[in-house]
Length: 388
Image 1 (tube, rainbow, N blue to C red):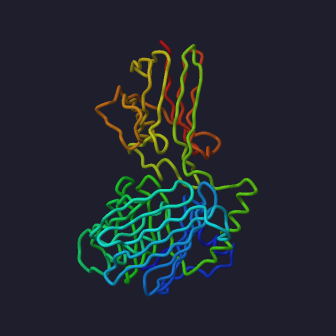
Image 2: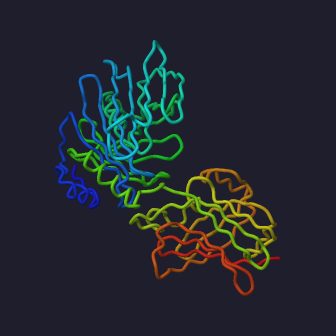
Image 3: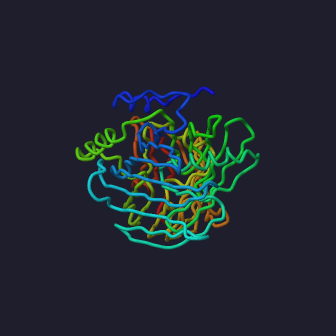
């Protein structure tokens, strides 16, 4: 199977003088590079040992931090002991900011976390269980190799633990050579390619709420990369949060209007018609649902919007699409319920002269009312309104 290596991965490799990507990896070691758009989000490398796996990671969001992990398994692939340590910054020196351990004790597992928010607890799992580390993917190597070793067609349940909570992931058999899916319990399904030994060669989470990609490479000088990214943090150029929160406040002909929304970042991607397919429901931001509050009654199109708080969802189209004004509030952006719509109104779509890197919602006063604008990339979606 031939893979195209993303140009951003090639640029990273060239920058640090690392070994180039190769199609056939050594069985006992490899590295992953995770991209969000064209930006490097995470780098990790791992080594298989007779007892399990050891890994080192670099995660850049919201700022650089590095981690070391050890996972020991028995002959049945079940966890015996797990250790994870995290350092803030780009160095493994000194005491870690946080440490966590999981130890099998009879038929259960004991979890303990020290540093930061200390925690402890127990959990159980009859199936082999591995850690879930947000935005880190070496545990996926474990689950995919397990699926390969079972050698049976069909989907395979794969529990992953986060703290003392077990999450029900699933490895989905697509019925084609080396093509699988990994279903997150809430974010959606990632597309995965493996080699003939079950090792993950690439991952595409474009159909999930994270929309990241992962490439396998031969090896990386992770400490050198971590130092470079930590230096960028110190120069005021951190990666930042994946999606922050934005707030727009405006007074329109006496009406006090506010919008609270998530702020995803373009990061070199084609947004509408690319990352966001035309006609598909969009939370209109990121993470928690976008909340819209007005102190006065409004008329949007032919829809009467009484004073109050609502959530906003959209179905963008090249000709504008639809804005849904929903009465459910204090919800995640994945919890849209069409039956709770106050109503739907048409949007108009125009192209701006400049690229808007961070998704922005703007409320502007006009001569006879106001306009609600959604701006991202060069796309501008607009809905005019009047204050009653």
